[in-house]
Image (cartoon, rainbow, N blue to C red; front, side):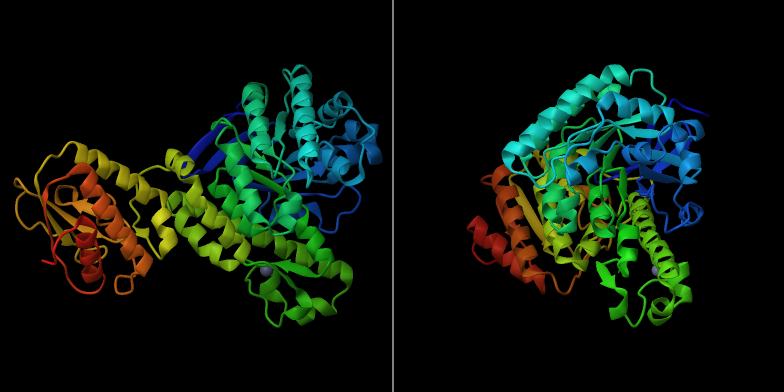
Length: 505
Ligand SMILES: [Zn+2]
């Protein structure tokens, strides 16, 4: 069924990441989606090959199209001009403004031009922040808000999905002010964007990128798709997907290729430094680095660009599958080890607790066990949600006698020792913290897996701190017995007793 352009349906969610369907005049874009940049002046990779690599959507620049083709593009339509017959997004030229100063075109001209060339998704003429001083950034935010307000009348009843970019990157209060304005104006727009982060991504400042996305996404309405401008690396794309970004665009795949560099899962590598290609895409399955280096420059750029697109597609497909399985957090733990910048950014996710807890579904139709690795797994939103549930349980379960037993073995059935009586029997365990016997068997009390024989010290300490705090808060004055066992059970029992001021039992 054809829906109005701009209609956005969310099919599945994990953390803040979602799989969605964005309707446009030229078809549906399944999100998260990457829009490869098609250069209006120079196409090193034929657009057909972009589609073959699995991308049914692409982006090009409306301002440069105007400069090069003028009215010809309006006659033929942008799809014909670039030879890409999928969903075509056009950027307004704002980025050129950032690079080269003023753009000699006004907003109404560029909006009307995007309509005449029949773009599917268009961008208003925002004022990108880039890496600017606070004053400059502030100016760009308020100039963009003003443009967004002025555009409302111009884009009314337009068949294009219009994007309103949030600016102020790098300054939390400015990002928030920009996002507040975007929320207010959102009913007039089909999509929201986050701009001005390209420079931070190029410098591997992923921490600033995720902080900016978080600051904006907390405020932006959840029902609108959000585009992150200039994101073209698997690591930042995955991190951004988890925070609720639905679309990306970048020219990185072609720029790296022109420079004989390839995108890998863990960074970017120079082709001449590789003896093997750590990839099994159609390009890498066929050629060795040496063979690629011996080709003509033109052929090599084409093949490297194609590989780079496959690398980006792999990252997006992996994130989508993780959303389906409810394993996006585990994916973040994995990819964060691939580059210090990604690790630094992932460490910040524990500050995004509230936001992620508000979006993460507690459990899904298909139950998949939680995989827990180290200290970072303590911030797993599903653990935090479980603990909230336990707090609620405790408020309704009074007792003056508590028996704490170590959870026998990660992932096994909870043993039911005696029928629940006056005393509250509960298991203590790394990560989840505490499992009342009565809740044993419910998700995720028997659906988690951790390195049982090598629990990190910090995790055992956190367990003791949490369990003791739980008892002090909910059962002050109760008589507590702490049973111990081997390995972490012994350490944890000692620490719990110590924190509760109990003698060794
Ligand atoms: Zn490859």
